[in-house]
Image (cartoon, rainbow, N blue to C red; front, side):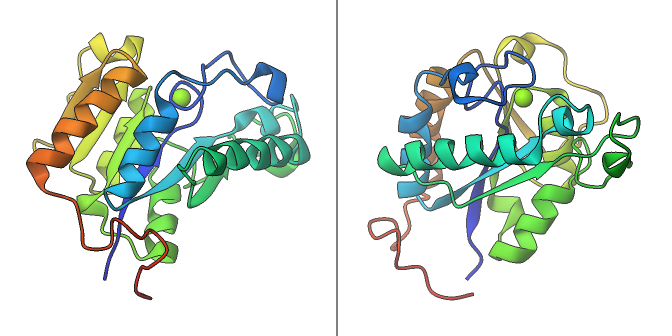
Length: 207
Ligand SMILES: [Mg+2]
């Protein structure tokens, strides 16, 4: 059985985007994120983080800094009953300072590579999956991966959508993470997405 994912960008969605965040003390959680991710999980959506980390290519921090922060972040989600299924990151950049990261990589949003890799590895139903991002590159990556419901959160939610967005995409605009959480409560009711598996999250059948 194909599963649905809740794809989450990191900076600007999970934590405040203060620019190249790479340490615990710079990581400021968005209000409502644990409640939202926990609710999505209970309703059968696997939380998957997809994050561009060009700070690595720019030489601002290393893979080890990123990994340590990610471990800490995932432990906090797990303790809050909102476990993250998997985290994908793209450290590449076409004009990277560090030559080993200099690439026009298919994982870097707005390309859909991270979502497509997750779909293959986690056996996901992309059309039934959700994406929450705070940039139009998040929206574009999700649309390119054939997602139908895409949420843009934060100050860019007031901007005009790029004309390239397919008409099949339902774009949801939310000013804050609290608004995303409230939207999801209504969405889950309307869509009837509560699955027989939703009460026991560890009982998924093997793909
Ligand atoms: Mg972001």
